[in-house]
Amino acid sequence: MTRVAVTGGSGKLGRAVVDELLDHGYEVVNLDLAPPAQPRCPFTRIDLGDYGQVLEALTGIDSRYAGVDALVHLAAIPGPGVTGNAATFTHNITATHHVFAAARAAGIHNVVWASSETLLGLPFDESPPPYVPVDEAYPARPETSYALAKHLEEQMVAQFCRWEPRLKAIGLRFSNVMEPADYADFPGYDADPRLRAWNMWGYIDARDGAQAVRRALEHRATGMDVFVIANADTVMSRPSAELVAEYFPDVPVRRAVTGTETLLSIDKARRVLGYEPRHGWRDA
Image (cartoon, rainbow, N blue to C red; front, side, top):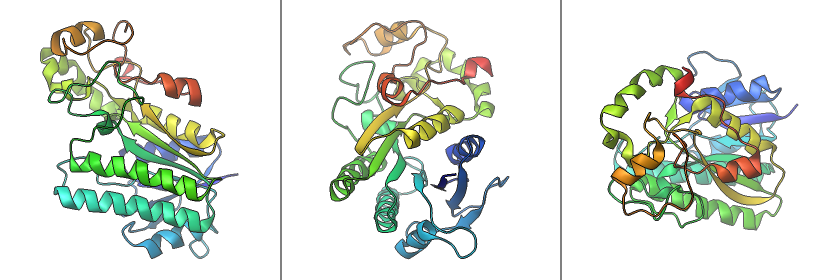
């Protein structure tokens, strides 16, 4: 049995990741500042801003567990505007540095971490993308302090992989994370598509985000890679091509999109990781 440490395991995506890993036979430990509302695995309160605490957490906590085999790093200030710009930047990039430095010291070579769709250039309604569907192929375009930290985290992780050739580090550029309770709001977006044009009407069901995490952990590779992770559809009832034509008329369309297909391309995640969304708001 593989023991996986999940930072931020008490959060919205973290809860789903803990469930997914446990349901697939992994042993899981949750490292977070906040205890989970409904604990399913051992929880240890860890401040990721303190490198010593992070190193302890990855090498073993007394009788609770003796080290971990793999790491999922989700803990972060979750988006721009939650707190001040400098606080967001400093907290997130420092936490990610501490996690990867401690993983290196602990000999952990399998790490998956939460990057962000914001690196694609969000908000798109202010800065349209170079083409649609958007994907991982064009350079990151951070527009906020939050996104800038995520961009620099990807650059930093690439250097950790250079230092340790055995390291596999996969960054998942998650779209806007949703749980089933959030889907009650979705029909209202049809009344004003501009409300969600900022991320090209994308979202990710937390359960499918968790599937992507598990598949990234199980992917056999070395080095760093990044993947856009979104649901297969948009939050809208209107066809995606129609929305692009109305709200992004000057943006080139690289390939045909059918029906309500996502405009945040998950082609690479499907091809490389075997990721396939199974949940969505239309089924809720």
